[in-house]
Length: 107
Image (tube, rainbow, N blue to C red; front, top):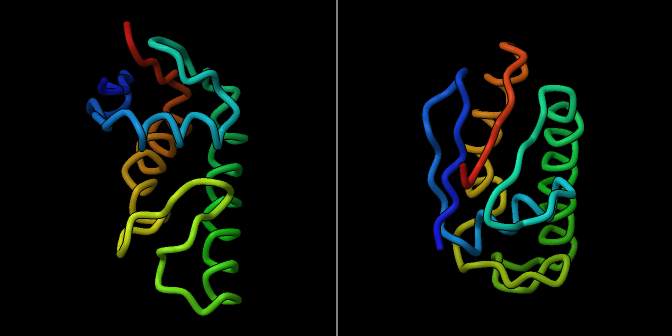
């Protein structure tokens, strides 16, 4: 399954199922086949993603790992951090926040 995030304020963003599901779980959304992040929910979503990124980086630094240990119960792909995975989604959310536009998927 693919997640295709859409908004009037940004281009479409396509993520593979594991990465899309993880982003949605981090921001507290049901990772179902369709959904919406309203303009009012975007600031909290951005904050949740930034907090998860900071938590992952702090855990890696404290453990001295190179990104191969599980973080928050999720396996981390070697060499690809949450910061890298979340950047396109964060960029989309920030554009949508500025334009007061919703983000939808599966519709």
